[in-house]
Amino acid sequence: MSSKASPRGGDHAMESSPQRKEIYTYKAPWTVFSLAWSNRIEQNCQFRLAIGSYIEQYNNTVQILKTKYQLQPNAEYPTMQIYSACEIEHPYPCTKILWCPEGNNTPGGVSGAANLGGRDLLATTGDYLRLWSVSDDGSGEGTLTHKREALMINNNRNSEYCSPLTSFDWNEYDPSMIVTSSIDTTCTIWDINQQIVKTQVIAHDKEVFDLAFSRGTDVFASVGADGSVRLFDLRSLEHSTIIYDTPNLEPLLRLEWNKQDPNYLATFKVDSQSTIILDIRVPCQPVTILGGHAGCVNAVAWAPHSSCHICTAADDSHALIWDLSQMSKRPVEDPILAYNAEGEVNNLQWSSSQPDWVSIAFADKLQILRV
Image (cartoon, rainbow, N blue to C red):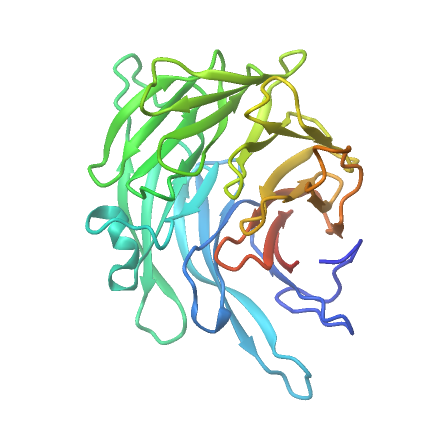
């Protein structure tokens, strides 16, 4: 990723320049919304991602993408190709996709299956929480087969209908635990090994739009339509702590927790061009606000290997990387890197297993960018 770098060339191709820019593009048959990097370390530095369609109807799709290198005749560098290794039929668009955290898996059960028999476990939210596994199909062609491992239904006795799930997070330190958020104002903590609800809390006064675990197993935060950021401790769910309210109670859409320095959270308001950085030690007052975008912010991701770098993406077709190392001393006015995509950026993920790479989604394309 370089300052205002623009993609060139066709789909599925790697771009080369004297600076060795690396931008890989995959064109899907539908608008790409949800996306996630697998946490597995693939052989030969290959990638595995999942992308979800946004089609305004019941039938939607999740594609599992893989990469392979090919050296073309007279080419100085091999060309990376991104291809669909597997397709999963999915009811309604996924609101979020995540792969099972690797390296911390507990033995046995669904979460332990992530490393058994070459299977890789992922979860999706929409109308329900679903767990899937993918594994090599044995064809030798690099394609995968999938299996639905679980369908998690919260039997809400107060309603005959399910409330759509807006987001979820998968605990990296206890992969048997997933927490989901819903438009019914609740957050639900699941034990996916037992496939049961451990507990459910009324988290906000209105819809809950997003949530994220802190480092460790006990604390998560959530944001929602009531304009508040709330902290919850699983050891004491009778109370929550409101660490921030938007001035006019404008809804907050997304939340990302800095896993390298869990004192910091990032969030942004609906239809806002700014990203709010919060220090949980200093509630109610943002430590800094990141501008830089000329369109509404849609996604934010902390660098998985650095406590002071964050990427934001917006409707202005830009993905911006910021250095926050001096934010306690002076305002952060300009990003250190910028990328100009070919359309409004809907989503963004920073790979935790290969932190030199960021993926963005715009229109019907997924792009992988080396930063």
